[in-house]
Image (cartoon, rainbow, N blue to C red):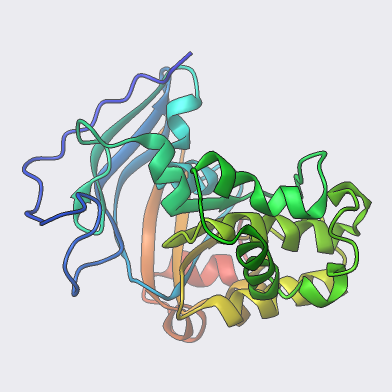
Length: 278
């Protein structure tokens, strides 16, 4: 069942050519008064924030404050949730993400997603990476694209002699990097990561964190994490969400990560990152 999506976006910003690509100087993603409900339950309330291009933004906050819901808004995965309704403005490169004629499938190629648990397909390593390219009708050199994506995901050296082996035969950390390579293969502009290290051991977690930092500057990355140390290590900016009784999640503070962790402007932010609540 398709979600009941209601977006009030006002007038779109002008663009030429690609309706999802706007001139430089604009935020990569922008929410203005974004609210989400699941039936009668408010999940997010009045979220307004800018996500800058080619930086890592961490979204932190206690369980139930809507972090994952917000992440799913950015590539319209809430379309797939029954009884979900979305209100407010959501812009991608300055353009209405929900405008008529915008293909949600294309959005998910351009705004890729990596989930909490590694979810490689029951296919070979090679076919996992090539999957999105084939669906997208890619006509170029598939071998080169697969190798490039695996190199970007810091996995090529470990699997170059195992490309025909099943992706499920890899370790947990390798599987997660394979999923990242799968997302990178279609050359997205944004990568969404929903607690990508929560199911991994410390060594695999460090590898994923190093990978995130190596990709920063080339991709816009948004990561949801419960790990304060991880947010401090990998992100350039941090947004702190919390939730009130029957009010849904709301944004308390959004600033550069150093500011958030050393001199937060809101006492609720300080209380959360120091472990005094949440």
